[in-house]
Length: 230
Picture 1 (cartoon, helix red, strand yellow):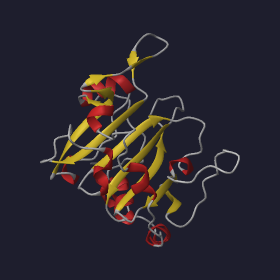
Picture 2 (tube, rainbow, N blue to C red):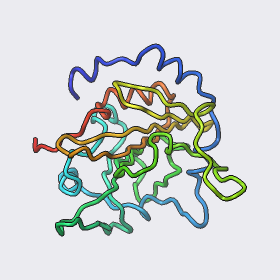
Picture 3 (spheres, rainbow, N blue to C red):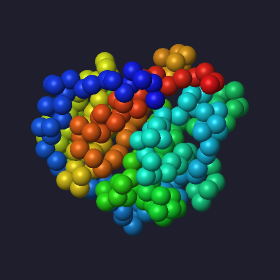
Picture 4 (cartoon, rainbow, N blue to C red):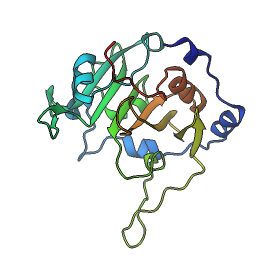
């Protein structure tokens, strides 16, 4: 981790805004298993190496430093099922992916047995990255059970209560807190040399909102990912 990343501090205003969040039940509702969506990581993802993932995206994967996850193991993954990758092909005929994940699981938890809901009750951190689209981000990362009006149209996300948007190092960061102890943190990054192309990031973890944002900041995850080879 760069030395300057370790020295960064959140402003007093940001810390106060995060401490004023009122925990809700929206993440629990969104992540809990259902019969139509088993939620198994093995069902939705397939592991890849860091080098392979870099080739598929064109930049260094967003991931946590090893020293922040000594009691966990890292699984980098792209969409797939039962270990089989499901990749896209770009206009030049090269295999690529527009979505990937960095999963941090307790060492005793086999990733094939983990579920998306594991973050609600275990020491699990999941980082999901996807190519940005036209949705407003990080506002659209907000989970809401009732998000349609009487005409079936989406209700715009409102800031307040269990959700807020703060600014950290010039980046808009959305944060949603849950009664389970889980928190969701969302932001966007633009890889260096990426011609302005952006990727949306969501991190789910079990820790206080202030600690979660500090983790993102200290890990340098708000910085543009590198497209150069180390």
